[in-house]
Amino acid sequence: MCVSKKLKAIQNSMPKTVTLVAVSKTKPKTAIMEAYQSGQRVFGENKVQELVEKAALLPEDINWHMIGHLQRNKVKLIAPFVSLIHGVDSLKLLKEIDKRAAQNKRVINCLLQVHIAKESTKFGFGINEITQVIKDAKQFENIRITGLMGMATFTDNDEQISIEFKSLKDIFDKVRNQDISILSIGMSGDYQIAIEQGSTMVRIGSAIFGAR
Ligand SMILES: *Cc1c(COP(=O)(O)O)cnc(C)c1O
Image (cartoon, rainbow, N blue to C red):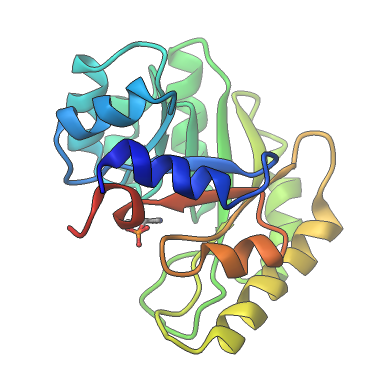
């Protein structure tokens, strides 16, 4: 199946209220343009270099999301144009994003990444830290915390994935307000479970563009 057909099938399988981020990492510009031509405008990349290169060459009305782990020394490269940063996992990183956003006269939307998986390799704040981090982030005038992001354990145990997503949904329900309205959970392998658990934004790559 081609990109546009897979994209449509996925869109048809989810509620209209859930935002689909098409994760185009490692995929060529031609594949992105195929999705673009069928109406997709939100794309996610996980490497700064690749994101910057693609953004420079592709249509200006694409909303680019940084979904991967972001190093502080690279924030300046995406600050002029990025529309949402998913993986914010430290106050130091927030501080740097705030500084670079101010230099670009922008307010940058950020999601706090929350560690919900069993694997220790996944980044993020602990669930218990979130309310405090949201308070601390209020000092940053050029940042808007718009929600939470998480990744479940890489497992085929759907029950465990459900429990992990639910733990994030519970804290999301406690902190959600007018600004904090995005719950970014769900990838190719687990987005249906994520939507059942209340996801408002899914990040889907291989199910649209094929295996990497
Ligand atoms: C690669 C990636 C995705 C998409 O993964 P697929 O399994 O290809 O859908 C989602 N979120 C993050 C943070 C990623 O790095």
